[in-house]
Image (tube, rainbow, N blue to C red; front, top):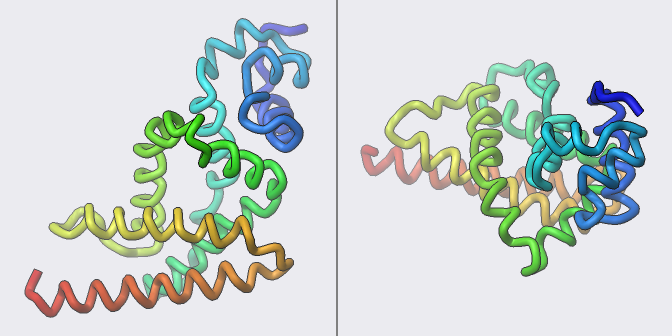
Length: 190
């Protein structure tokens, strides 16, 4: 085994393990064995499950900004959020298994640890889509998109269609509601 960590190999191994063993299998020792690398060195890079999960999120979401080409923020949001789910679709069995594991009471600590990076991702989605988040209502916008994303994840988990029609319909409905909230708040002079 080598002490250099082949990142791409480790990520691929992590996806395989997540699918087969779920969250409990995402340990540096199990991943190192699957990736034929050094467990001690891997633990230095990924000391906790949350570090491993963040790397898997990064693997899915790192190149999504290129999907935004429109001039309208709402259309960009739709395209960008659906690109997230298309990226998740490539690892669907693993993501569904992780979702089921994380949403049990046994792993709620991970949700707390992943909250800040998830909110940062929601902020990046808005910014990439052309929606400003540095104004007075920025925190509210990020929070609403973050909550929308969590709700959509529950829809996506049950959406087994190839075209993700249920997920797209739910996203369209969610963005419509966010637009209604935005119009109401804007009408109040906020």
